[in-house]
Image (cartoon, rainbow, N blue to C red; front, top):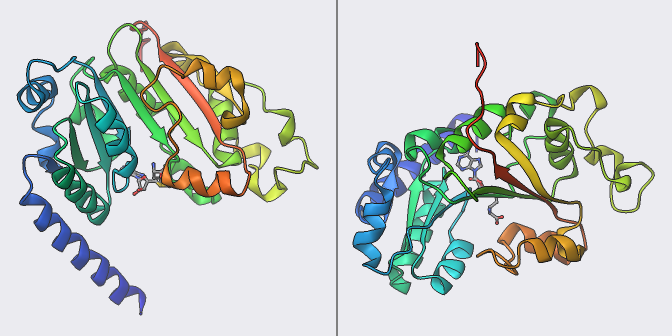
Length: 279
Ligand SMILES: C[S@@+](CC[C@H](N)C(=O)[O-])C[C@H]1O[C@@H](n2cnc3c(N)ncnc32)[C@H](O)[C@@H]1O
């Protein structure tokens, strides 16, 4: 298939699934519709779940076909779960899953994570999960990495005051290295080559590692940091009360089978920071 034909096919498939999704307007919110409940997600879940709704909301970025989110949501029917992905077909498959299982506490959004503060109002969300974001690991793509100051600033604004957190998992050594750079944290010793678990081509060029970012550190504190989540008793204990404890995502399962480590960070929201001129 030529580049132009492939692009046309992708556009066609996107529009077919976008149209199909519009038939599921109660549980799927596509593009602009993803913004219509901003500040009112609690009301939506109150209607869908009833008086038992605990007023807790979990937002999963890059939920793909929502198989992971639905598995967890089925165990916590009084909590609201919102999944987002930009792939129409994956969201459509997720919607079918929600409809078939009759889950009242999950909705899905087709949209861009970069628009998180158009989706949620201030302080609406209890947890943000970013599990295995796209690696964007070629030098020209690094600027597209989601975990960076603009996204984290928006996430800070939508997280509830108090105990609210962003959780990140990645299978990608260079992504982890990138985030450690932003947070001013040292790299694990496994990144000192030669190392059995990490290849030099999986690591970043030193000049590409971002400097410690004060705007991010004013907004978040590092609560948990692990370079081998599933083999780290302290990290597992730190999240044992979380909804996602013990659950493996689709992408993660492939890396676990290959015995590769999963990198993990829990960033706790700090109280609203002083925002300096120019920020
Ligand atoms: C590597 S997959 C991981 C899927 C799932 N979280 C897992 O662990 O199995 C990344 C997912 O994030 C979605 N994604 C990447 N960047 C996104 C963005 N900026 N906004 C919305 N979805 C995004 C992709 O479409 C893809 O489904």
